[in-house]
Length: 501
Image (tube, rainbow, N blue to C red; front, top):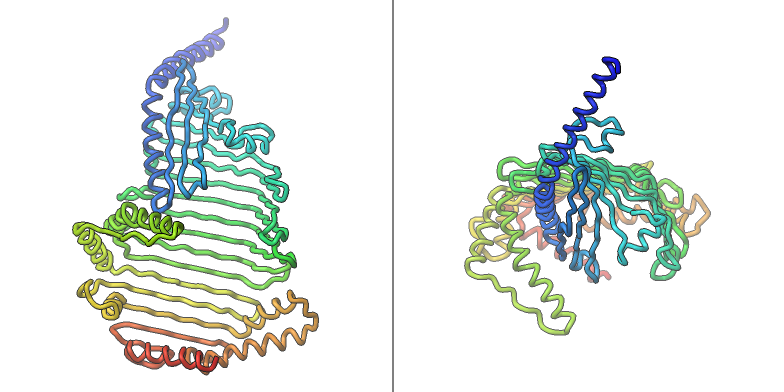
């Protein structure tokens, strides 16, 4: 044996010895790590289901330990309205390679030591046998997770492609979904990226008209971190290249292309803030482009401890009350009385005052629809504040609760003409000039009615309405008045419309 071969053999023997010793050590630690991970997972499941009528739990059913590998079995249970009429129970099998150098990582040239590599898969049961059949008798849900010695994890989650008849009138075709996930210890930080190529569902509606839903190019991304108060903050993104929905007796085709949803939540001290942005690059009907749409909403200055305390009251008192009231209504019985103890009433009042003292703001930053010839949009800002007393009469309380209310609405008449013209074409009209003339007449009538009632003004080709409230004073379309005068004005206009009708 030459010197090089001897050195190589020595390295192989050393790696084998280290791997065997490390595998034995991993095997002794594995059950504790799994139990800790399952306990953390159950906390997250409980938090995720807050406010829903359902519960879920994960448990370790069995663990068979060997020198270089172990086999674990898990049970995931879900019950309550969130999971349907009957409880859901899923079983998983997990083949775990012990570290520090699992064989599957060695052959893929990933030589960074890890505690273990988990290969999990959904098991076949009476509940999942149809799902298995649709996946050609393979486990339709599989994944790989690498567990580091620092308890950080990374891996993949996969839903296999499906092509299956759900019943005699419904069919599902699904390309599958792949998701990459990584997390630090105790999932303090989590990142995920996923992709689905296509999804098609054909079925019928209540009138037995065919319905077809097609989705293409779905991308998912999350970058989250656990906040001081135990919930996740950060960014979530959903993008969809193309979607089509075919429906109704006339088989209309609604297309939504280049859909994008982005959400962001942040924490600063004891306050939370968040926003959500939605965009649709193109809205079409029967392959005729109608326009594009945008929605942006935000929430600021939300006191976290007060909100969490109120959520606790909701879970323990209001949610059970709602369920009992629903059952009573179904049985034709009077609704039960909601009872709070004096201590609970005091706590709720204190939480509301603390919540309002932070000055929460809710905003509809933009709601817009744009066509070739115009854009209609609206925005609203509502600032709340703590009143002098929570025991004021309702009218006085509302005045003091609202620190600022600002609403702006603009309806473009050319945009209305574009939309109404498409509607006319869909109704079977073929005279292009007549379609446009009717659309213009309808848009002009809308503008005249809005201006005639003094609910709006005309700014060029735009119908505009503006409302600003602060310090017990209302400014509506340039006219200043008290709250009482504004309410009287609105009631008089509504009353006039009712008399005319």
